[in-house]
Image 1 (cartoon, rainbow, N blue to C red):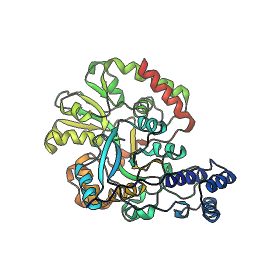
Image 2: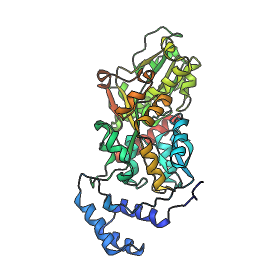
Image 3: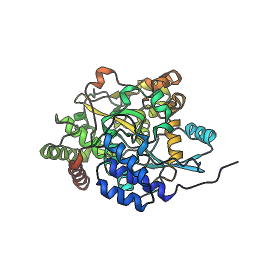
Length: 400
Ligand code: N2P
């Protein structure tokens, strides 16, 4: 029998928001107490929260979190990248918890952010990349997690993915806002059965002889980042003149690009397009559809010589989630080693859970970059106020 759907009280959501504000230092203690009392919180509860926020401890302080309403809803709303979830994982979650997963899609971090900023509510779990987790937690768009409902995090996540710098407000009060989902890199899928020229770098995608045989990602940080890197700069440059030069590069490349796209890369590769800028999992998904290992003779995967992007995508719970409880259950479920393997065997990205390897199809490991290759990769940082300059640059490139 299905349990009735229960929405969390508005009060629970308000308390989460209030805790966020004080924890991130955006509200004075006085404002916090006034608002908390108006919301009906007791003086002693407010005192406990303030004390915990003042401690700035490294350990997760659950004293600051509102109590969990552990009623299960019928449905969990997952807002995700396309081709980034295995149907078996959704089915398994429903079987285990009785909660069905309703998945909708976004194309890039910036549109996910815009959606939440415009006040979209009802998403229980979202999948922002590293730098976007930081932007969102600083803007109070995602809520601190109650890690006692996510035991798989401590149990299974590799040390490298624990306590990442992007998952911290400026004041480190020890709370966590995200769990790692998958990680990956950005490169070029080359149909070597269709073209014989050697391809090794981003600048090859500027060669006019490949006109209309090039697809680029439709992604602000990725495309500007690749252009910056090609010019010898950082993916995280905060120099306006470097950013201008990268924007000009992208504008210059525009006439030879067939499409800018974040969702159909596997189709582009499988259909025979020579050069596709894409993420490793989407490239492997294309190879899988083209026949698996034997398709490796048709496609080569290039990690550009100038340097390339590396990302960690994470699960987080928006401040306006319908069911904080179901969301915690899903975050925990997705960190189980067997479930990580089920994911990887379908979406072909890389897992932050080492124990999943024993259940992983070896084909999934085909494009995992070596440590030597990773040396020239760069991760994406929250650029703070300078993010606006990237948005402006991207708009001017788009309209050029
Ligand atoms: C999967 C999208 C991967 C997200 N199709 C890259 N951050």
